[in-house]
Image 1 (cartoon, helix red, strand yellow):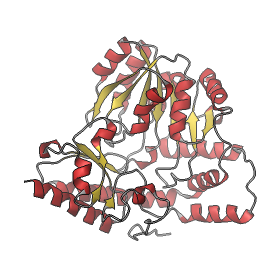
Image 2 (cartoon, rainbow, N blue to C red; image 1 turned 45 degrees about the horizontal axis):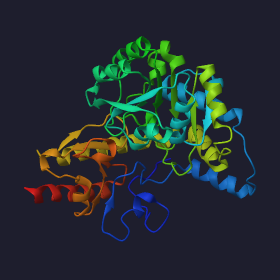
Image 3 (cartoon, helix red, strand yellow; image 1 turned 90 degrees about the vertical axis):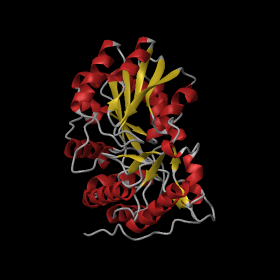
Image 4 (cartoon, helix red, strand yellow; image 1 turned 90 degrees about the horizontal axis):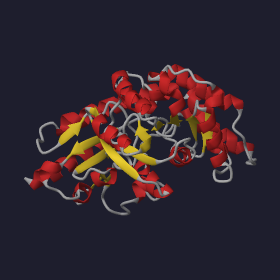
Length: 375
């Protein structure tokens, strides 16, 4: 089946936080990380069938869904896991917090910066000390990370692929990181929700697969919300090989996490069972949009675009323009983006290019207009 990624779907005046942010303003929203594409038909049909059933009592995570996760990770990431390692979560973001709380050696936290807000907020939410280390298109600043580990941090939170930069990490980079994790007896929580959105025909490499010697020290968070555009139907799994950590996570969830969402599990099941053809058609669209964005902005020396290797998010350095708050400035020109300050790096913007080409063309025209008006 051929899917249409060119249709503009009207999301205004509904429940979309992306499109409601600017109210009646003439602003194209290209900020929060969801896509302006319709979901795969098998997911839609599965939801319709489940609603038609008419009963929505308490549900459980069936063994078949766990097996689907195992199969998906084996086929898409070449990662072999034991279904017993899987712990159901209400979503990735609460999963981050629960995983930290249940960590076997909980002390202070450290995470790369820039990074998307929920990772940076975990320490504050849990009343823990926290620190950062650098990350860029060139990789992690492991010297900074080691300094934080020397000062007592023992829980490293990662985002792989990295949001907002869109960087993937190589085996060599993971191996260098692993040396520090082992040397300082640390633990890692890795949010891999963008793992199915690696571009250019490449495949996601999770840390726990790349460095199996770290498996007992790593929790990997997975979900279909980003890749299949079902973030509004949240459900996730934590992959936890460490039995002690897994048991403590399950105990932490008891009484705090809601019962599994029936429709979310329905959507996830359909995505992993029948959604691969849709995803295979989506990835070239995202690659084409990314390349168009880079080409369109290439003649603007005031902007430095970090070419994303994964995700549908472009990280753009606007510091040469002298804008203190780039997102506010661009809003005046009818473009809604995420400000770099939200990720811990002022002077940058993050722009979401997961939209029909016509929307992207207009959005980038407004970005160009804003830059040229500053000259």
